[in-house]
Image (cartoon, rainbow, N blue to C red; front, side):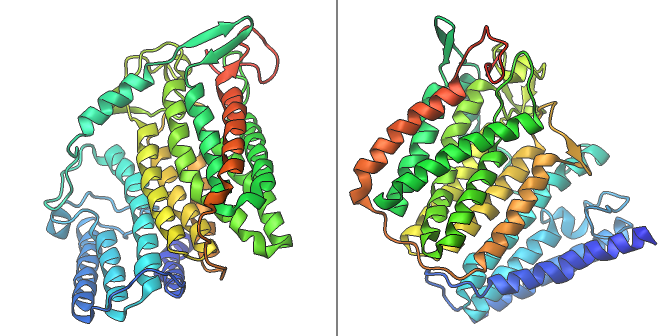
Length: 445
């Protein structure tokens, strides 16, 4: 009975809750032009619905099970519509969602509901189901209409990533060690602080500084809670700790002063750019590294955490930091376009959480840190990413003022804060005391 209830509840999530949420998101006001194309829209809707229905039927008959990734069918299905279209149920659903938005001329449907549906499907397909299928059935055949596995330039990008991943070096100033990734950790903090001031305005320089400090402290606390200390690494950092600290402190500020919502939105705007730069530091340091892979990068620098802590020296691993960088560059560009178009502030905030949650869910599936906990079949950070996605979708539903134009006159305050947090974040994440056994003294082997 409990198994049946679990299946009914899981099915209701996708049949009732998700469609209701997407309908609600269709009402979000967006400033982008939206064509009304009834002919094209209904054609896409019908085509998508047909692909989805054929996919559902084929999976139930030939796969001998229900179309639920939590309760997967017994057999791998590669024929029929599955041989033509990758993930036909998800593909059909996304086509139908976008088609309906075009047919009705719905701005929220086209620019909010459809991307949310696509990102959710992408996270499930790439960040969970693909690995589950590989584990159960081995190598999977590629559908006829699947995208190329290695796009042009991918091998050159991998080669550059591998060089950076093997570039760790340091200089000593007495007991102090300065690692060469200080430029990336410093730039991440500097870009974040300066960008937030330019977006929110000069009068928010002090609150931005406060939230930057809170984020750094939160990241350190989360690192201790989920990774802990060892002789080789006593100062780990956790992204979700930074996110939680900024969200709680900034959220309290905004609740007390709703007109200051621009402060949190500014952090959402700059966060993808900060994380993309910061992931370059991760590559050099070797944190957030990938699991063994058939194709990827090889790290041999003994100071990299991939080698010193995970024992993956000389092993081909997923370039998970690169996955994160690419995802965040796309997300950052979308959010910047929304900001410049004066989209609602909550659309920027929620859009960041939905997009970053998707990127992190997928990235985390291919990471290989041995200390990461597994909870109910997923890595713990994937559950955090799911929470980000859900909260982000709900935040987008909250009405808010439009994003203001960037305050270019705030550049002196932005530059000063950028320099300050270049130093602060560079010291926190790239300077340590390697001979010390004191708490928080070591960053690397």
